[in-house]
Amino acid sequence: MTKPNGDTFTTIDTVPPTVSISVPGSTSKTWLLVSWTAVDSVSGLMPAYDVDYGADGTSWTPWVRGGMTTSGLFIASVPGQRYYFRVVARDGAGNQGYTIVGPVRFGHDSSGLWKSWFPLVRNSHP
Image (cartoon, rainbow, N blue to C red; front, side):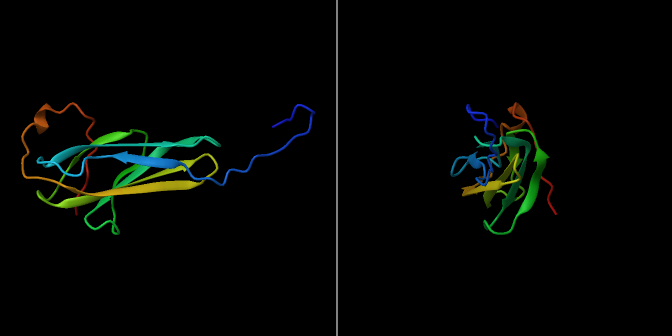
C-alpha cells in the first residue's frame, strides 16, 4: 500500500476471522438447520468453511469440508442425542478462527423433514 506522501507499507494480518454459528438449544425434531458465518476485515475470508459435530464438544466428526455454503440440514443419527457444532474459517493471510456451540438436544420427531427446503449437507456416520 502507498501512503499519501509516497511511502509504501505492508499490513501484516495476525487476527483470525470472527466465526459464529446459529442453532437453537434444543429441538423436538431429529433434524435441524445449522447456519454459520465469518467476517474478516483485514485480509478477507477464504471462501471455504469446515464444519464438525460431536457428542462431547472435544471429539469431532467432519460434516462439511471446504464448503462454500453457510447453512445445512443436520440430521441426528441418534434421536435424543446432544450434539455440539464447530465451525472453522480461514482468512487470506492463513489465520484460522473457530467457534463451538452446544450442546443441542435433538428430539425423536422426524416429521416435516420431507417439507424442508433447506440445503441438505449430508453427515456421514461411522
